[in-house]
Image 1 (cartoon, helix red, strand yellow):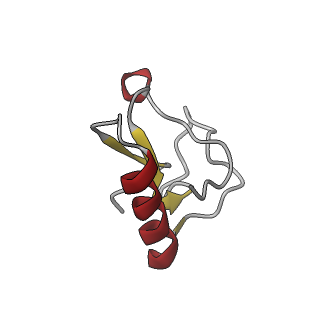
Image 2 (cartoon, helix red, strand yellow):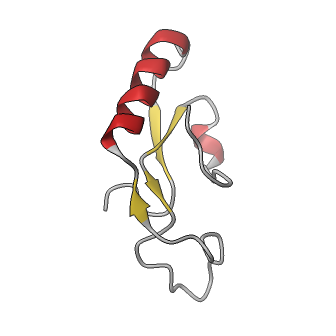
Image 3 (cartoon, helix red, strand yellow):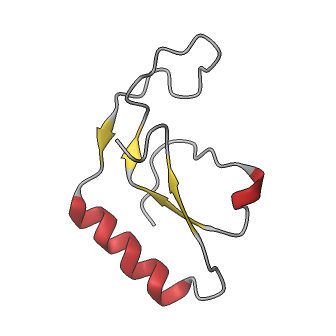
Length: 75
């Protein structure tokens, strides 16, 4: 899996596959959150995401859920 920086996930996702599809947060201006300061938002390259999905399909057979990681994964 190709992770960049620290991955933040809720405790409820402890048993999920963590798929980082974006880096940083598209808003990145919340006064209560400094988790993504210094990270410029971008969507990861489709080829990298495809490689991570293929890896998870092959090696992460126990997990039943996927958590899309970083600040705004649905951007």
